[in-house]
Amino acid sequence: MSEDRKGEIEIIPPGEEPEHFPTSRIWVSSGSGEVKMVRLGPFQSMLLGLGLMTIVGLGLFFLSGLFLILVPAVALLGAGAWVANRLGFGPFRRLR
Image (cartoon, rainbow, N blue to C red; front, side, top):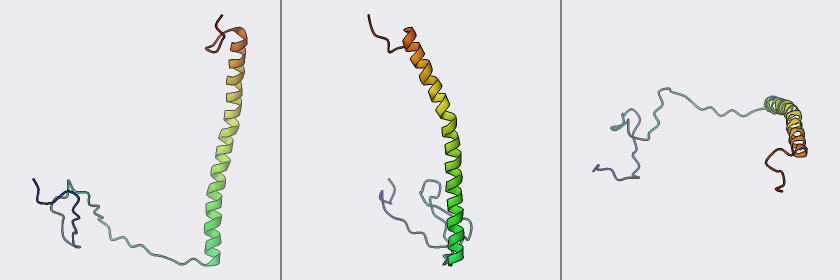
């Protein structure tokens, strides 16, 4: 059995390689990425809000187009089911 107990946290200092890399759950980044926090001004906030509203609007536009395509298809299926019921076909006919 291993010396490490299950659930024990391993802290790897910067610049050192982990001992058991393939089986460990350690995320290793190869880049030197930096996270920058930027304070937005009023104009930049308006542009960000406008961009988000544009994305949401385009999503609603395409979803409504899909809805307009699906409505006639569902209506045709419903009409077909009604006709089949009137003719005595289908799984919902009454047992006689």
